[in-house]
Each structure stands twice: as C-alpha cells, then as structure tokens.
Image 1 (cartoon, rainbow, N blue to C red):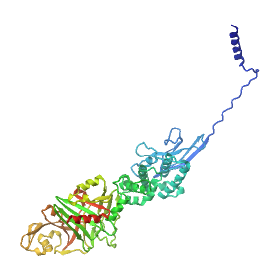
Image 2 (tube, helix red, strand yellow):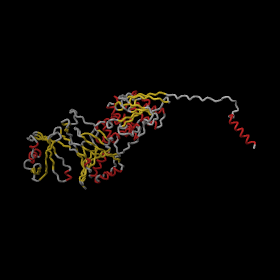
Image 3 (cartoon, rainbow, N blue to C red):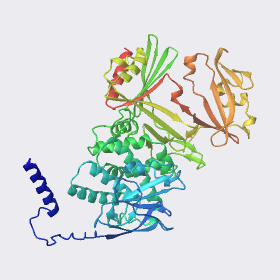
Image 4 (tube, rainbow, N blue to C red):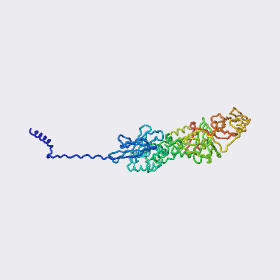
Length: 578
C-alpha cells in the first residue's frame, strides 16, 4: 500500500517543478522573425499585329503556361496602335511564361480570318467564329503576331518530340532562317514585324498559303520543318495555281484544291518525309511527266487511244507517235477495217480570237498572242484552244494495271478489240475533255466563193448548189424545200441529200452550215457539216469546232499511257485485221 502512494507523490512533484532539475533561471530560446519574401518587378512592352495593328486585343502573361488567360494572371488591353505594357511583381526572378493575345475579328470572312492560326498552333480556339488567338514566347521581345504564333506552334512540336534543350535551340535557329526566306523578311527582324509589313498583299498571301500548308503537312507528317520547306520549295508552283484560278489566294484555298494537296504530297515524298502520296488516285509529278510526254511533247507526236461505240459498231483511232499518221479502225460484227491515215502536208490555219477581234495563227509570233501555260488543279489540266481564250479542261482518271477498277473497265471495253489480252503499262490514264465554247478556224489562205449578193438573207438553194456543186447546176439537183435539196447522179437518181441554215458565227458574222442527211445511224456519226462565213459577195470556207463534253457520251473512251505502249497497240490492231 505504501509504494503507489509514493509514486503518485513523485509524479505530482515532477509536474510542479517541470522535472528540469535546474534552478529558477528563465531558459526560454527566442524565435527569429521570418525573412520577408523577395519581390521582383517584371515588365513586358510590345505590340500585337496580325493583318495590321490590333487595337483592343486582350493580352496576358500566361504564367502557368496553360494557353489561357487565367484569373490573377497579369493582363492588359492594346491601344489603337496595337501596343501594350504589362507590369507585375512575383517571387520568381526569371519566370517562365507565354504571351497570349486574343480578340474578336470584325471581318472573319476575309483574309483576316486567319484560316488555320489556332488549329496550326495547337492553341485551341473554342470560341465563336471570328475569335483570333495568337501566342508568343518571352524571347520574341513582346511582339505578338502571325510569325511568333507560327514559331510557337513549331516550338510546341519540339517539346512534344522530347528534344533536348540544345536541339530546341538548333531547330529554332534553323526555322528562323527558313521563315525569313519563306516570308522574304530580314532574319534579325523576323519577329518584330511592323503593322505595315503585315498589311502587304504579298505577306498576307504567303501567310494564308503557309497556314493552309501547315494543316496539310501536320496531317501527313510529324516533321517540324515540313510546312516551311514545302512552302519554299514549291512556292512558284503554288503561285501559278492561284494565278490560274483568277480569284485570289483566299478564295482559291477555300476550295480545298486537290492540286495543292498533290503538290504538298509530292514535295514531302521528294524530301523523304513520306514514302508515297496518300491518294493513289491523285496525279503526282511522275504522272504529269508521263502525260506531258505522251500528249504535249515538243514533236507534237501524241500517244492516245480513242474508242467510240455506236450501236453494235466500234470505232478506233490511235495516235502512235507519228505526227503525220493516225491508225483508224472500224469493228462491226465480223467485219474489221484497219488503216493508217496520212495527214499530208500541213496547211497553216488560224482561229478567231474574240477578245483580240482577229484571226490568230499560233505558229506566228507577230500577232501579239501569247498562249497561256496549262494550269494543273488536282487531276485536271486547264488550258485554252490554241489561238483563242476558249477554256479546255482535261480531267484524268488514273489506274494501276493490277487494280480491280482497271480490270472492271477493261471488261467493259468492246470485246471485239481484245484489249484485255494485252500487258498494259503500270499506269493508264483515262481522259474526259470539255471544250466550253465553239471555236471558228480557217486556213490562213482560205477557199472562197463569189456570191454576187450582199447579205446572207439573199442566199438561195439554187445559188448554193451553183457555187458548191457546179456540175449539178441547174439540171442535176432537186429543191426539196426552202432549205433542203437533193443532188442527182448521172442517171438522174438521188445521190445525196443536204440541208442548209444560217446562224451567227463566233466573230459576229453570218455562218452558212450545210449538212448531208444520212439515215443510217452509224454512218451519220461520221458526217461532218461544211461551214462558210457569209460576207458581202463572198463565202469563205471555215471549220467550226463545236463545244463538247466527253462525259456526256458513256461509250466514248480516251486513254494515254507511257509512249512505249503505242507500238504494242499499233501491232495489236493491225493483227486484228488479218
């Protein structure tokens, strides 16, 4: 009973004396006052421009680098010149940040719409149409513009690619050199663009084209340099496409032109960024080389196969590299006729050029006419009828000889031609051709007839027969009606029947058209009308090349291919006639 009481007493005593075993002196250690944090003052001044200076833009210092202006992050608004200044303090001596500018564009449908600015940079734009967001890095010296935004997009690609800090420095230096070249700016001042520079049409067009290419290349390769290298390498080709379109860069790019996509893919292939174009149906540079060598070479010797079917008969024409000869053939049941047509001596011809109001012979250089260079858009070649401004469009459909679609097409070709038995080239190109208006041509020294009448309204059937069928006038023809007549043979039997009409020609004059009437539908396909310009006291023989679109005739085929295949086709058709 004694020990517990003693233990309680000892505990109580210890609590009263703090069990220190010391004397009564105060041994409390003073707590030091905390050192106030160091504050650093920061200042950014600069200018926001895109297409001109941007007034009223919201600018912020994106300290957490989340590509948004968060609450509490330093911000301001640009003045009328696009200039701004932001002052703030922080405990970090050298903070990392991005500079963000955003505004609502008052003309989003124009070239100021920025096309791909937000999408290309990776800076998400989820606001309404017309909202523009652009970014700059701290070392852009406060400038925020299209080029800082483009460089930022490439910088983000570098970070995503896990490049080392040294590699990032090297890449950015190379990009700066490339962008200075692509945008034709002084490298040292590349990012300090003045608003005046950004208003220049050439700068705007280059920016629109680059942003379009940036999206295309991003879809096809992860290479950081791809877009600007494509721009520089193919700039002249893109310029020609845009000029050929005729409505400006912005309007052209809004059509999502296949021609640009093809050129981008071909350029990426040549740089080794892609193994082959994505679309095997798209014409590439090799295909166009094949087409040009087979159709538009310097010797004018084409390599083209035409096949037309009328009822149960098939007509073939083959240009096989001989400018003076064409193989033609008719397949009708068991009857096969194959022969070579010789063109004979070339007669100088000229065609009516309506804008110039005169006849043009393209082999002469003394008439002020310059033939437009063909323009390629996707799988389409745009040109004009030589000597005129009449548009001609050729659409190419590309086939691989082992592909199912080519085998299906071969199966649809007339079996009498036995074309499926041939070993076709690896690439074959079917063409659809469209001539949008009639073209009037004549020999440079044309055949003429004196009529003795002043106007076309004074022409009569008797006068026409007297001039053009003098052997039948006056007794060996019959006037069937006002504009129809029959020529009789030496026995007084009908030999041929014709009708004639008067219309307005392409040069504004009157045109006499005489057509033989043929009842047989196959033979009627071969009939070519005769045309004469009617002027005071004169008929002048001309040719009228009427507008056409081969897509209207589903039984008409036109092919070109590697020119080496022409000899195979020529021998093949010749063998069918034996």
